[in-house]
Image 1 (cartoon, protein in one colour):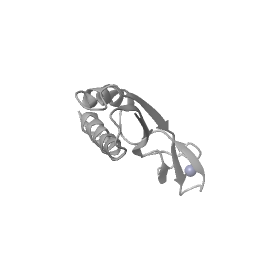
Image 2 (tube, rainbow, N blue to C red; image 1 turned 120 degrees about the vertical axis):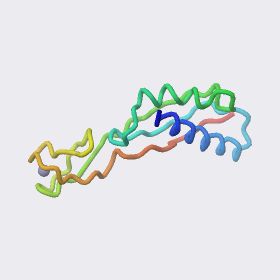
Image 3 (cartoon, rainbow, N blue to C red; image 1 turned 30 degrees about the horizontal axis):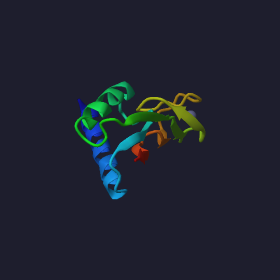
Image 4 (tube, protein in one colour; image 1 turned 135 degrees about the vertical axis):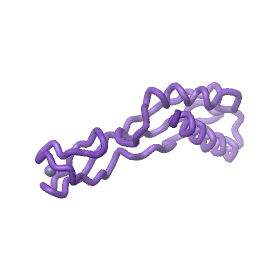
Length: 113
Ligand SMILES: [Zn+2]
């Protein structure tokens, strides 16, 4: 599963930050996932605690924040909402939509003790 690798990477980064802060426990982790990042949110929600098992992040609460997809249609020059890729413009039906938001997968914040 692709999400397991991503979850492990997120936990790794969060643990590195915990170490930097010289904290002994990771309490909360907030992750931003774009709607068009190609990541299954439910799968990631399931994988994060599994990836954290046996680490300082084991007791952490993982929160996934969804970032709505957005794009710019080259045909009609509109800012449009995007929920899938390749994106189709809901206004003119064109496929020349450049994604401008919603492809991110990143650690937004952590809370340590
Ligand atoms: Zn359009």
